[in-house]
Image (cartoon, one colour):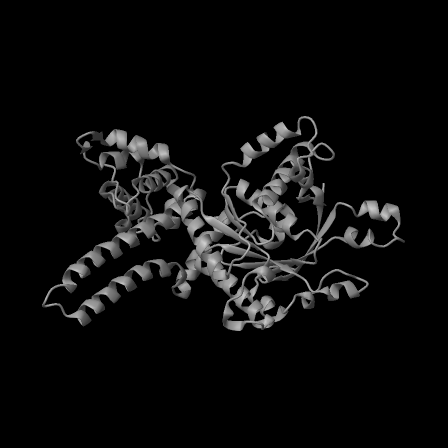
Length: 454
């Protein structure tokens, strides 16, 4: 029953069927989004056709009905009862199958292209070959495959309204991946796919701390995250995430700061706690890339590769984070034109969110003009080369820590300085699908930890 061909993955197909049998009420959400021809294993294709047909007729198919629809012996060494028990054991929660569906479609597309390419290769050597007719056939095949991926974003008003009503009846589908912070989830509806989030601030405001702490929680909740850090090394990223994890367990002063982890300055017992923190994060869908120089084309290619890996493990790629925008390597097309280079990066980030069906979080440095004002809370005009970024982004949030500026003023009242120490403001200044908000958060910069205010 198991194929070793590189274009087939029966485990994906069986996991999908088992998941739908296990959650029959979810089948209408996918009944017209998956085709039986995508399955390489005939028995899985037959089972899906039965599930799909009955769902379109408003019926649920029972496990027993599916079992009885199969021949007693599926292969010389495989009985139908054993096979059905196997696929049920593979079943995942429906919330985790988006990546499997994408992988199923990609494998089907590869098989179609392979099979037709083999046929065209044979025909092109024939003396009777009409190359123009052959080219036309090839274009038709490629269009057919491409249409299979484009149909999720194309349709009529009725299609869009139907999908919206379906999601309204299933509220979990309307929300994006959690940001890990309830108040921000309520304001933004989470990190939503196909949207661009710009999070900006001056140096020292906690951009990297916020992004890493938030996205660690996103991954812990089963959402795939890829983090591109063009400034920090892998060791620096690891130290920050370990310190953030231990902050929940021990708080201050027991949790090691990320700087103490990097320096190896650990108190008795903290070394063992690092092993426990590492173990707790070892299987979460969080990948990072600490390359020093990357173009947006590089980032998209790497993100696409990680997306495929996630999908093979039953996760979807939900968030790509880039830290930060100004050090993404621009193409040579606009060399020296900072406005055009910024536009190129923000446009590419927005397009990548659509193309990879994920959200993109783009961290951004603010201009120095903030420092010249009495109130140093950022405004939209503080975004460097702001026009294109404002236009491309679905959400723009600014990070601000009053403590950063108070501690530089020798006249600051010590009580005021102490009260501001662990406070971070998240200022929503653009929200295409919601309201603008000022959200106060708890932030321990030394531990790379951002939390709700207790």
